[in-house]
View 1 (cartoon, rainbow, N blue to C red):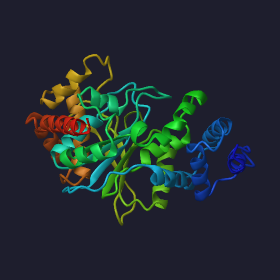
View 2 (cartoon, rainbow, N blue to C red):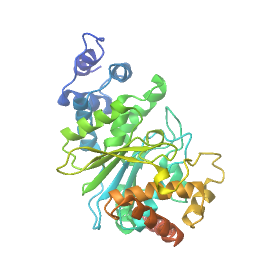
View 3 (cartoon, one colour):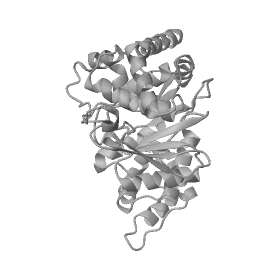
View 4 (cartoon, rainbow, N blue to C red):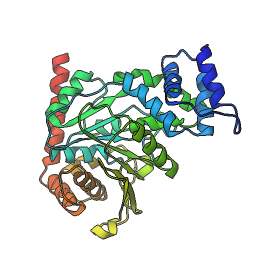
Length: 353
């Protein structure tokens, strides 16, 4: 048992009127003791549920993010015309709508804009389809790659994926607690804010509840992150919805936090999200989009990719971004990008074997 952790637990779990907010350094110590298993399982479970009930502060999240940055892997900078887009997607996946991030990443990479994903396999509490599984439906397997191999694929193709069970296993020690307590603990928000890239980047994060937006903004301000996007997206992801107005917060260097409101009706699209149906033929559905076929999923990818091409600096506005996204799909350039990723992974896997 950790007596240091017990003192921190007492502060967090003392009740509505007597609990105390942890300082940034205390929050960092708490997460460090949990990740390194110096705190006991009973202490860890108690802390996670107490922290969820009491709700975290921006300073506490900033301290925990310090630990992620201390222990977590990072890809080194590559030469690119645009900043790298790092997408913060909930690790427990999607259960109602199709994730757009892999196809969007291929479109952006084909336009010269690098993209990094990170995540794990199927996990609580949602047990939805995770990004790594979506990539596998495209015959791209990131799970077994070393950090050096991912770096090489990233440098060759503008696409990288940090599969945390292999490359950041320390954080997976807390995954079972999510199932045991039946709730996503507040530290799951770190999955959205963590940036495993050492170069110039744009963080793109999703959220569901408005208070989460304020917490993330406060934590990133303490970390002096100059540029990011916060999207009230599909199932907490940074994928733009079509069935409602997309609400996006934008932070640019040296500017005040601003908001964008985007409606598909202004761009002649229907208000229909691509549903997540049976996954038996999902790979064919994804490849169909990359072959330039006009489907509901393709329209969602064009909508989503157009936004990120605009915000990434590739295009000057949303309409131009959507037009470029469509052209990259119809011309099969995004499909060529997929083939390049498959070849690069085969190359590094062969060299390792």
